[in-house]
Length: 204
Image (cartoon, one colour):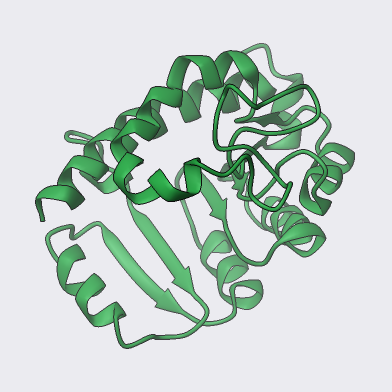
């Protein structure tokens, strides 16, 4: 998604556990983006190595491993590189192991099931309405989270939810950091990139 933002010099490195046959098509579609590189292997080994070699401000998006193991991976990466400024962990909905681990280890994190954030940006899901039409008719995903703002309450999340985790030492800076920084960064890049990427994929 971020590769579609014009004018942004972002280097994007993706790691998947193993190479699958359909990745050939994915690699071909991504060939138009010279700033995107794909790696394959166990993220517990590959990701720390990549993070440790970065020499510019970096953000980390984790969607595997899950839960406590993912939080440990993020902690390791923060220790390895001063350039890692923000980390994001998928499937951090309320009641999940990941949510509990993030709230314990990184208490100033911010989550995308924040009601004000959801009310502002949930319209982006309209771009995926055809894909998720059948799913959106369900009240929730096995009781884990809701696919509709109408059914969301204080104890549940809207969608699978990202945890937005700022680098711990930044929390004591005078500049906008911590949960505020995570929210600002995520709102600026993700909302714009999501919309443009969906349109790009639809037209590909």
